[in-house]
Length: 244
Image (cartoon, rainbow, N blue to C red; front, side):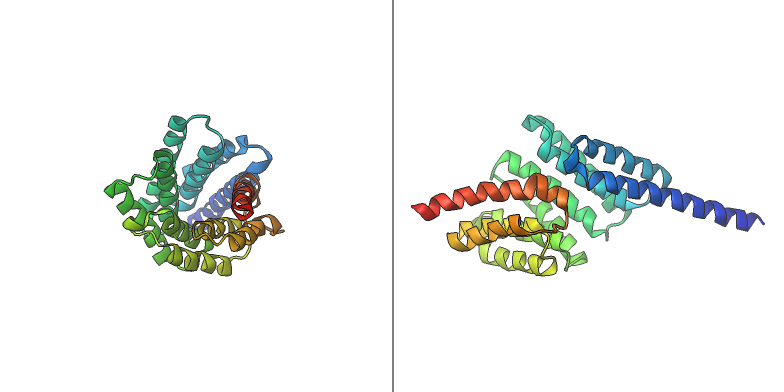
């Protein structure tokens, strides 16, 4: 009888946990409707962790929400830095729970990359080593994940050639990301930026315009608040070069 009651209790706890996660996901993936939803989703993911502190998923979603918050909300660089650093801490927690959890490595990389972008193009050896280690580990664990492929491709695109940057390798990886998920719109933007750096302006323009033509983005909120905005900015820049 005690065993039956324990099973019933366990099922109930799992059901409650799943409900909190679903609610948190619903709130996060609709943040474009109201930016305070980002903070609300973080609260919900933390609530989920109170029920199940060993699940890395809420940890990486907090890291993801913090990165998104840092991109869109703070008005000064110092505040953004603090948010990205907090995002790294949550991703690190996920890695500590499960080193083989690919998205822990990815979101650590993503938050650290944002920090690096704030500080400019001068990479410290430690930062460069950490970026490489985490994005390559994420790719090793999930080689066919569009988000991870995009991160890896964008990394090789942004990295100076004397530090290992490679536009051709970046292009190959970004095209693979698009093959894996044709609706992951950030990959089109990053590929367009790559082609722009290669001075292939007509191709870059068509690729950037693809960001605007995708009718069913994998992550609509990201597309609405970031990808399409960045694509529009890049399109204007490319058109100026074409007119010259």
